[in-house]
Amino acid sequence: MLIVGTWELRSNGAGVVLMNFPPGNGNMYKYQANTYEKYTGGMLKKKGTYRIVKEKFKLTGKMMDRIIYDNDMNATTVYVFVGNDMLSYNVGGYSTGDMYARISAQ
Image 1 (cartoon, rainbow, N blue to C red):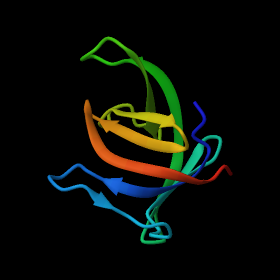
Image 2: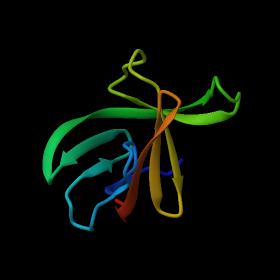
Image 3: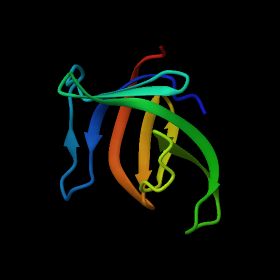
């Protein structure tokens, strides 16, 4: 899975109403080979390590890409999907509705 790069939030649909975010909003994830940084409003909020492992999704039996932050295997399960320069997350079996656009491949 190619997740390396900078991803900026474009939409959030976890609530009842879909919210769209313009380019330059500063809500981003920056992924390197095995490290990440999370920004909110352009401010660094968290950084650490990550890894992606193949894991069988319990509801469907389908193999998916699970992202594990800071080697915390007990954290809520988060699956990632990348396609057409968009990144989305599935947390605990539910889509977050968050869609991130790749703004840099580095």
